[in-house]
Amino acid sequence: SVEAMEARVREIKEKLGDRLFIPGHHYQKDEVIQFADATGDSLQLAQVAAKNKQAEYIVFCGVHFMAETADILTSDEQKVILPDMRAGCSMADMAELAQVERAWPMLQELFGDTILPLTYVNSTAAIKAFVGRNGGATVTSSNADKMVAWAFTQKERIFFLPDQHLGRNTAYKLGVALEKMAVWDPLTDTLQYEGDINEVKVILWKGHCSVHENFTVKHIEHIRQTKPDMNIIVHPECSWEVVQQSDYAGSTKYIIETIRNAPAGSKWAIGTEMNLVNRLIQQHPDKEIISLNPYMCPCLTMNRIDLPHFLWALESLEQGKIINQITVPASIAADAVKALERMLARA
Ligand code: 13P
Ligand code: SF4
Image (spheres, protein in one colour):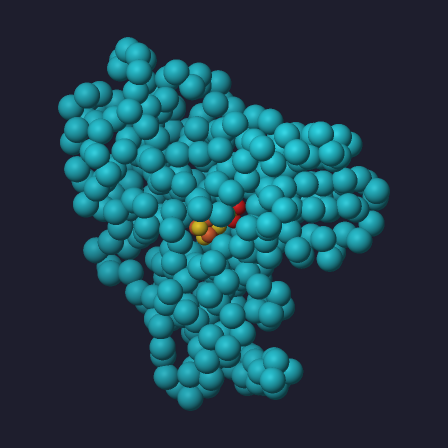
């Protein structure tokens, strides 16, 4: 039963004490996140992983790229475990190193040595290493403005991986016109752009989040017509059109804080992942909160970390067995850490 599984989790947590640390992303299910020692968005979780020096086992409740980041930022003795190896991220999978290595010389031929690569943390360690080797940094949705502004102090152009929407929304907010943004399509190895190529300031990788793409302008129009006094707040992984037509846009942390600080009685349609929206609905009974997409939008891979997998990982550790360890090879970690540290120094 659920109660029996929960009791076992508590027992093992108690037994392992400080040897065990459980970070949990805000998009995780309640059945798992209730046991997290730290909850946060991707940036906060990267920071807690970097700070934790004592835990022997880090059981990461989030997706694969987050566990890789934790492994890169912790010591060799600390073991990072992902309770279900199938908990990937479709966005991270949209940028493979081989594709990026084909794009980069072609872009350099077009623009010379004027481009700084940046990658959203939602990317594989191999992509972070590519960026780190080439002088660039990682970004998250809560520091993208700061990091893109920094990148423009380094080079004339940026190459933003793998989420075209976060890249476009951030650059636009900083004053770059849409006409100055081109899109690199990794499936055809071509740069999609109309206009004078010398004017390009931002090259966006053609990737997206399959959860946040489910919030559309049609959903916004429907809310505006049926509930005109409702505020619309979305994550910047949503498309540019959706962000433009919303009242507020920002990272997971920004959404949580905005709702927390909103007055009682205020009304909100939220465009982000389902588990977080449901949690905000439960935590704020004094506010009227709905999902911007009435069918809600779960992240199927985040949801793969469920109570049975989580307990299985803990029971294995209890028996001294290391299962599902995430290890980033040292050669990749050495370059990836440069990209992460450039961000953490400024975050
Ligand atoms: P943040 O946690 O940085 O807001 O990112 C959202 C996300 O999609 C995580 O996978
Ligand atoms: Fe990836 Fe989107 Fe899921 Fe985040 S919400 S893990 S970006 S698919």
